[in-house]
Amino acid sequence: MRGFRQDEEYQWKAPFYFIQGADPQFGLMKAWAIGDCDSGGDEWEEEIKLTEQAVQAINKLNPKPKFFVLCGDLIHGMPGTQWRKDQEQDLKNVLKKVDQDIPLVFVSGNHDIGNAPTPETIDDYCKHWGDDYFSFWIGGVFFLVLNSQLYFNSSKCPELKQAQDEWLNGQLAIAEKQKCKHVIVFQHIPLFLKDPDEDHDYFNLEKSVRHNIMEKFQKAGIKAVFSGHCHKNAGGFYKGLEMVVSSAIGCQLGEDTHGLRVVIVTEEDIVHRYYSLNELSNQGIGASF
Image (cartoon, rainbow, N blue to C red; front, side):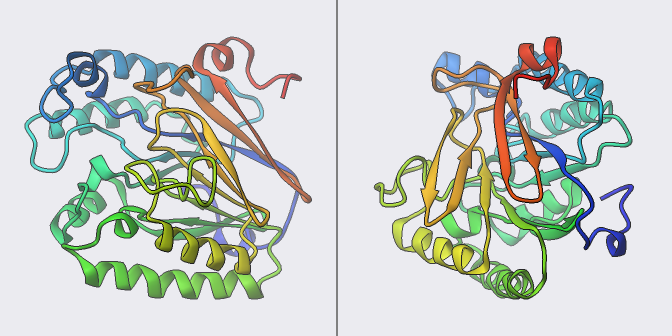
């Protein structure tokens, strides 16, 4: 977290806000349009333009957000596929234009590490984008970044799932003991889309896994989980824990528009709103929030 001294961030200071984005997923728009999501992502000029628009909109915001988090599926090309390296480089070229005073936080998605990740695919992700799970403090608020793919399918790397579980238990213990104002989680795959008891499918976690995590989070006092993956806005509550699912910067699979979520953290609450890229570019967050 460039620009922050960790020892100065444990105490609450004042309200602040951050920007959440998800699924720029360079290559999916062409692949989805031609009906070939496995190997059709050979063009991503539209995603470049959309992500550039997102970066320009963020850079214009005043005051500046505390950070910009991208909740996974940075690119469409799965590990080992033909277009992956070019997609990664093009995304990095766009993100280099983010204001240097706005730290970037990256969350791993299934397209970044594979639907069934391996130690090798996770290691490759970490070399390009940083750790696949970690924590940080800003202004008395405790943030956890998780590798949700380990909860979706860890069959090829069970030892890595165990390591994240052990780490997470330790972090949740810290969250319970520390006098932090809020605890917020970022992950790619939502716990659920609308209902904590909904059936399991590609876009959420399996029921028993989901409920185990939700109980852990609720006990530790976690207020909200922010995710992507669904390419449309969704969300709900479980015992006061809010699940926030944000639509994509890139390809839309519902009726939402390309956009970003603005999240304001106050001493008492966490409030958020999804903005289209055009609205954020033209009007900023303004008084309409």
